[in-house]
Structures are given as structure tokens and as C-alpha cells.
Amino acid sequence: MLETTTVGSLPKPEYLAETEKLWPAWRPSGEKLAQAKDRAAAEWLRHQEEAGIDILTAGEQHRIHFVHGFLENIQGIDWEKKTPMGIRDNRYTVDVPTVTGPVSSPQPVHLEEAQFTRARTDRRLKFTLPGPMTICDTIANAHYTTRADMAMAFADILNNEARKLEAAGIDLIQFDEPAFNVFMEDVKEWGIDALHRAIEGLSCLTAVHICYGYGIEENLRWKDTLGSEWRQYEEIFPALNDSRLDQVSLECADSRVPLSLMGLLKDKGLMVGVVAVTRERVESPDEVAATIRAALAYVDAERLYPCTNCGMAPLPYDVALAKIRSLAAGTNLVRKTL
Ligand code: ZN
Image 1 (cartoon, rainbow, N blue to C red):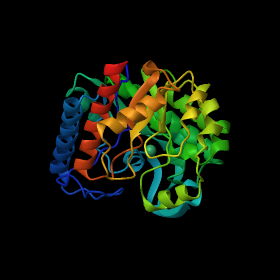
Image 2: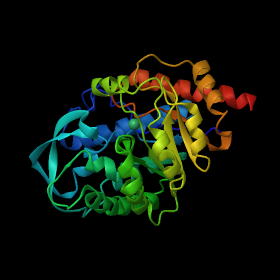
Image 3: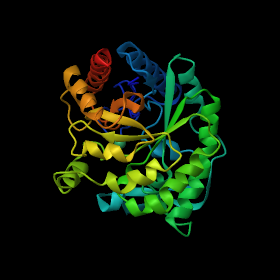
């Protein structure tokens, strides 16, 4: 009950990459880089075990960014042909690579990393993949007729990948779809269909992570325009509750998402964010416990997974570690009283 987990990404140590950056550069290269990635992943697994987290991730130590780390090995993308694109409905503009032909993945992207991770812990493992809609919001389309067509092509690739990860012993596959919170109409029209295609044939648990993003300046400015209550999820939660995904995330720490929206997800597991990623102040175990207790008014303990609000990649390493410890300690405080 109240099984703890994190959304996925965790900070990279300084021997691996530049720190506190969303798009860091790797520090070593070649074989030394491969070793450093493994070492950093193993260290995060140990930290989470020691803290008492139940469902672990390797913290995405093997990839530079949660979307591009997956796309690096996909064919059909021209990385030289950069197209300026207004990401998340023009919240910020980035020069992104361009899809110029049919996309395919001759080799699994993350299989070795999953096998490495599986061999290093007996606990349940979560593996994160970018969702099809978010991929399409991070890369330009110069080949497919519509964005939905491109999303379906990526969903097929993700499905192959997910099946291999499941076969490697991954217990839960989570698709990161921050774009779900921006293109709400598209979510209902094709976003959930694309996720269904990505999870087809899987017997492991599946999850979708939606969010208001990291604490980068562009996101903070956008949040300032959203008013005193963030009700965007209200539009898509009913459709997600009808979906075949097992778990959905929402932010409850330092957030203006009304907790009552959890009532729209009566049939799902809820990853309830109880530590914020937008501030460095570490929540105390008592604060974490208070957030969990508030959420328990809307979701029973069997369906509540205390979690981070979002990925912690851009935070200082020690801050993320302290937040994970608080997450586990605060959850234990609540468990004792159930
Ligand atoms: Zn997120």
C-alpha cells in the first residue's frame, strides 16, 4: 500500500555530465562514457533502495534528454536539418531535428540499459519512454501528412521497444506525455489512441505521466497565466480514465491542481506528486505525509503511489537525493497510521 516511486529522470553526477541543465553535455566519451552511465545508474538504484523506494528507475542516466535520448537511434530523422519549432504550443522555440522519411528503429534503443538495470536490483522497475504526442511536439514533420500519422508511426516503434523492455523484466512502462496538457483536443482525437498502440500486447503495468513541466523559466511564466486553479486536467482525465493505461500522474506538491480532479480517475492508479521539482527547498517528511493524507480524501491507499511531481533531472544531485528520502520517510509516516 502507498507504493513509492519517482516520475523517472534524476540528476546526473558531475563525473557523467554537466549538472543542473536540461540539455547537458556528456563529460567523458567512448568507453569511459558508457562506464560512467552505468556507474551513475547503479548509484541511483542503490540510493533509492536505501531510501526505501518501492518501484525504482535508473534515473535516465543513459540518455541526455527524455525525448532525444530515444530519438538518437531512430532512422528517418535528419539531425542536420534543424527546423525552428514553437514547443508546447509556442511556449518556447527550439531548433529541432526534422523527420524527412518513414521512421523506423532497426535496433532496440534502451534494451541493454534495461538489462543492466534489471541485473542490479530485485525491486520492481519502472522504465520511461517518451509518448508519441510529446515526440511529435519535439521534432519537426516534413514527411507525414498529419502529426497524428507521425505519432502512430512512432507508437509502432515504441510498442516494439516496450515489448523488449517487458521481456527484459521491466515491471512498469511509463510514457511521458507533457504535451497532453497542452493539446487537449488532440489527446481525445488521437493522443490516447497512439498510446494504446504503444502498449498493445503488453502484460506489464503501464502509466502515463502528464505534467506542468520542470521549473524552467518558460514554464514558470506559463504557469503564471493559468490562474488560481489549474483545471487543464479536467478536460482529459475522463478520457484517460476510460483508457487502457493503468496509472496516471498529477502534481500535488506546490501546485494549483485541485485535488478533487482525482475523482475523475476512479479506475486508475494515481502517481501523486508529493515533492515539487520546481524548487530546491526539500519538503520535510511531515509535509510529504500531509500531502498524501490530503490526497487520501479522493483516492484509496491501494491506488495511491506517492511520487515526485515530475522528473528531477535539472535539480542539484543532493537536493534530489534528499527529496527522495523525504518522499519515502513521509510515506512511512502515513503507513503507520493506516
Ligand atoms: Zn513531467
